[in-house]
Amino acid sequence: MTTTLVAGCLLLATGCGSATPQERPLSKAPGAPVTSASVATTTPPDAKPKPVKPTGDALNTRKVRWTKAKAVSKGHKVQLRWWSGVEPCTVLDRVKVKETRKRVTITLYEGTSPKAKGVSCIMMAVEKTTTVKLKAPVGKRKIVDGAKS
Image 1 (tube, rainbow, N blue to C red):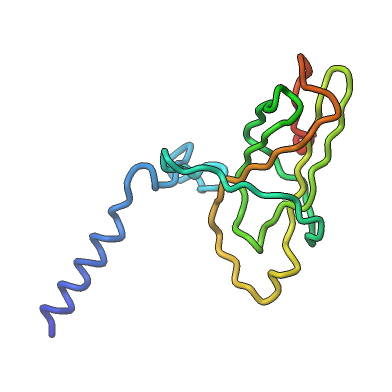
Image 2 (cartoon, rainbow, N blue to C red):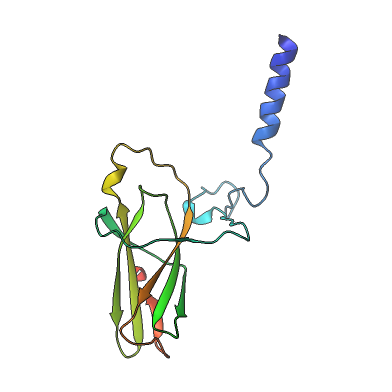
């Protein structure tokens, strides 16, 4: 019994400290608190972002920053990427596009789906993508994240 208990404790102790460097949280200084901004995120090389479309019915919506914007379809569309939560707990509600002569400002709004009532939500990051259509090609205009302002 004692041997089994000791072996089990050793197994647990070894498993707890075996995170790879990519999975360990990064902190700026020893003893500094770990925040969501300081946790390393890794994506397998073959993983692609999950394509999503706005639902239009999300609750508690908020602006979300995107990480990458790329003009596609000869500049008539913009493909956006961002990190988000899992569905139905976090869904894309809508995308607001404001076009001027010098800028294309794109704002993503996320919230919780009404279908998430009574669902347990896990804290897991998912890279998502959506494509928005523009009134005029991007051309030399700057693409700006509306959630940053």
